[in-house]
Image (tube, rainbow, N blue to C red; front, side):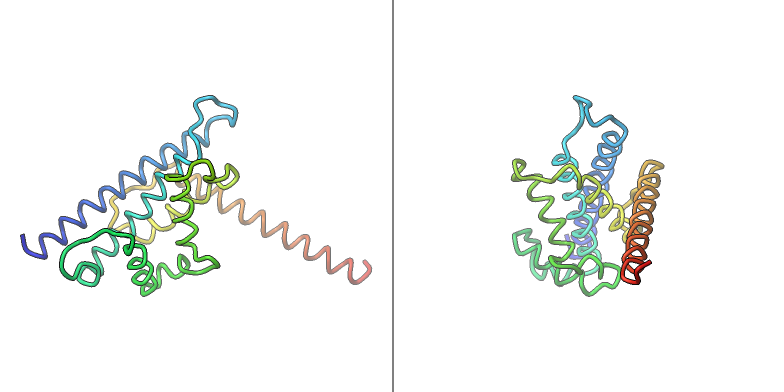
Length: 189
């Protein structure tokens, strides 16, 4: 097999795995969103975050294989702990992922932390109040690489994005309202 065939083989395999993890994780997440919080068959946030964390990891690996194959695999593919470093070095060269590199710690490290705690350390895993974090990030990353990952956003995904947008707008309104209240207080009004 020549390099072109290997590159296409790896890309195809990784992008299909990414799509399957993304689809499965989001389906489980949406089914959980629709159940009452006291439901006995409620799937834990650790399972959802573990699956979506792995989906994100595979989406980035697919992207890197497609765009930086020779950089990552100069001789033969090796998926080691150094892989995370390779991904972070490479994705910061692509403007569509700039937001993923921002923050303290960077967003990609927060995602990695959620994933690792969910998969390897469930006792100290993700908190229930953060159940929306990885689904939101997974969809945002997917939307930046739609041409690579052959997944189609479902109505549930779109509804979830609308809910997130509405929550952000409400938070901004509340923040603006509180800011104006503080100004009025300072002015003695």
